[in-house]
Image 1 (cartoon, rainbow, N blue to C red):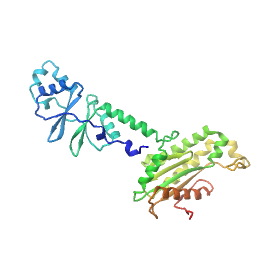
Image 2 (spheres, helix red, strand yellow):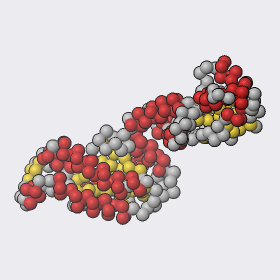
Image 3 (cartoon, rainbow, N blue to C red):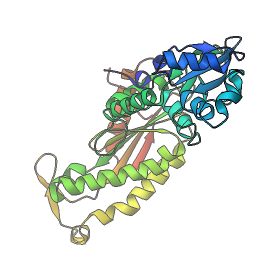
Image 4 (cartoon, one colour):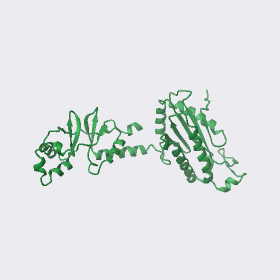
Length: 324
């Protein structure tokens, strides 16, 4: 299975070699090159191995084809018909980034090839067709790694992010889990249960993803975030406050107001009804250096177990005891 790094391909990996010319080449010779290569979209003008301009077939023949164009340009230097400000990108730039730059060009230049350099020297070009096809391929492949309900990164991308976090000087891993979610599903059905998960997703996006931090959906009612700092108390408190304030709207008022209302619990026995709450298990590398993702997973799971024992919504930080 591909990883995220493989999906975000460098633009240089799809670049093609094309002929280049010097700035002093005459337009008559450019015309000969285009004539001999009918599928060639453009020619790169290079000086000292560096691309300085781009002659596109369309632009070239638009100028040559005017009333006096042939006589005016054909015997003169090619630089007169070259575009002197083409889009030039580095070999290592991601395709997703180059796609945005290409689409920001003027309408006249929109379909021009993208020129690629490596170590500041000309390497090749990428056609807009090839760029867009690869971009769509990346988007489709990336979508396969997203949770289908929340559209957040799923387990594969979460694991990759956890691996990356091991190299961070500071990190906090936040594991979110709903209490009494199964009971809610049994009582109201999976359709309403999904609405609760989407509601929680929006809360987490506002408080984590929109701040630029990683947020993933493990599955069901389990979510995970990675924040490259230790100061996360305010984030946890804001999430819990927003969740506790809004979750009653997903219940029938009769169930909330009946003190003796009972539902079937996890063990299959009737127990007093409890409204959903949110547990946030937090693990940081403030006191211990983790070497493997498995160590992170074991420790955060231990914090989660302790957090689940607390009645109501809560968050616990680094409170874990591993079995020996």
